[in-house]
Length: 206
Image (tube, rainbow, N blue to C red; front, side):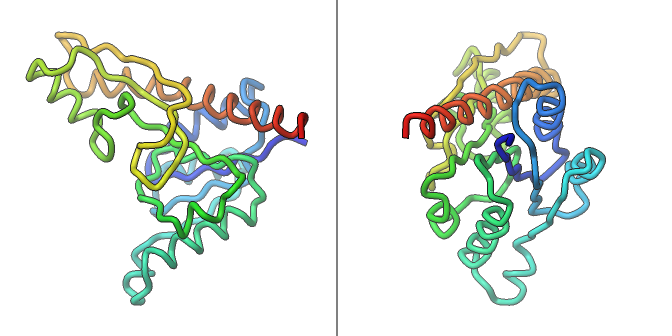
């Protein structure tokens, strides 16, 4: 039976598409039983539906409107994922900071995230924009992409794969974004494959 990878998204889902394509062409020996978005009407959901992958939307706003906490939201999100029996959870452009109420539900299931920056640089939102700005000020010569384990500290988990991305003098922000996205699509698939292989080896030796 193929390992099960649950993917969390918030937007267009181009990284989700890379994972879907990789499961189809055999680069990633896994299946995606569920895609969850914290925003409705995003293109990533359409990508999943087109690939006949079940989707769920769980937004934070109805919780806050009803006077519920982020912690309650995180606990419900975790239950939704656990019901799909994942071997791996991938945050692919998922714009929500996860609390211990979520993370504690996954003592053995690995969680990985993709971040368009090098370890310790430009953690959090708008990483590409901030790197581009720093380059223009002469503070950095290149940026990068990493796949890392998810911990409570935003983008602070152990890096699993890291790749530098050059910033060229003729780049505008759109050109840099495009170059970074093309690296992301490859690195995320490699990161997911690496973690699944590690998990499979763990079970063999157990």
